[in-house]
Length: 190
Image (cartoon, rainbow, N blue to C red):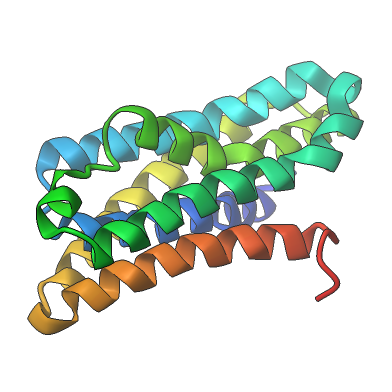
C-alpha cells in the first residue's frame, strides 16, 4: 500500500467519525477542550486499534465480520441518532444533560465509527501487509477529522434559531450513515 492509497483510505475511514463529530458538536452547542480531546482521542484510538485487531484475527472471523459488522454499525448509529432526535424534540433540560463525549455513548460511537477499519485490517492481513504504519496513519487522521468535526458542529449550533433543527439533522445524519453502511454492503436493495 503506497502513501497515497493509505491517506485516501485513512480519510475515507475518518468520514464517519467526522460526521458523528459534527452531529455531536451541534448537540453540545459548546464543546470544551476536554470534550474535544476526549472524543478525538477515543475515535482516533479505536480507528487505530480496529485494523490491528482485524489483522490479528485474519481469516478466522472474516465471514462473521463481512456478514454482521454493517448490521452492528447500523444498530449502534441508529440508536444514538434516534436518542439525539428524541432529546432535541423533548425536554431541553434533559437534552442539555446529554454528553456524547462521555461514558457509554462515547464507547458506542467509537466502536460504530471504527468497525469498517476492522475490515481494512482483515484485508491487510489477507494481503500479507504490515498493519502498524497504516494503523497509525488511520488513527491520527481520525483524531484530526474528529476535532475538526466537533469544531464545525459547535460553530453551526451557534446559529441561534436553527440549533434545535441542527440537532435533529445531526441525529438524522447518524441514522443516514447507518443506512449507507447497510446499502454499501448490499444489505439494502438501493
